[in-house]
Image (cartoon, rainbow, N blue to C red):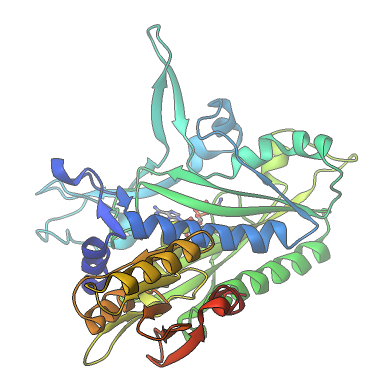
Length: 409
Ligand code: GAP
């Protein structure tokens, strides 16, 4: 884990939030490579959940909503974690994450009390200002727009609404790098079905399969993923059934994404019906930051000589790196520059002419660039070096575009 945290900082994937002022617990900033990786994950998710389907449409709702939404959805009452405080050092912990003694000073802990995770904001110019909340889950924006979406499209049940966006939780114990943050992104599908037990079971199983297949299609090793069903006493207030896809992380098996049978909880709370009945909802809810972290952990390899991020080429921040074999031969540099600028129009491509070729390869391996193109003395061809095999192949310059687009299919 420390190796990933340090790689992320050193190479510009993830930085501590507000670092020059000492940071702020639970907030992270994504650097030049991190934003590319995160955007690539979101793009692949959107492709698989929206563009590749006929039965799902997208939405982008506001982060701040009328606070009545959170009363109706049950979050102001039930969106809580159990909090305990050490009677000696007064440090606070989530009761379900500690034993009966303070982990810091072994002091006695108080009885648990419920702690609401919603983050308050105050709006307006007159006093008292209006209290609202930063959304604790992106989900409610979908439910309050259910009617708008049905009325403005020709979509019919069963259908889904997909959304990606920021959520905020005043977590008691943020930690494990970006795993548990106070500001994070979710990618969610709310899939509306007829309120029938068999439909519920069918779609719950369907979405479990789809979501697992999506993670493995992006290269996460099967043996590092598993399902875990929530016991009734750990389910969120809205869920009649919940299963997590968990990842085998260096800090144990941890929740990656939740598949939830929300029944009619939300639509009935918002008093919304459709064709005379209240549809049920099967939800898939994944974290973009967790996907970024777990994909990095899963892709990290070391051998005697190099560190490699074996990221799926579709996710890699840069697809191609272009090097002139030598930096002091004008014709070679010019030719390499032309190839670089041509590739850059289609793929995220990076230029490097520092140090020797071996060092340039290693620097690209460490950030997951799948292919390095070296321009040498051959008039019509270049070498393309593969990150994972380190094999080099000669490719005609006129074929370079199709060479990469074939591999990215
Ligand atoms: N709408 C349902 C919902 O929000 P959840 O299980 O509370 O369900 C869904 O959250 C996903 O959001 C989690 O599986 C995780 O990937 C991500 N997530 C939740 N809390 C998070 C946090 N504090 N930091 C980073 N990601 C988080």
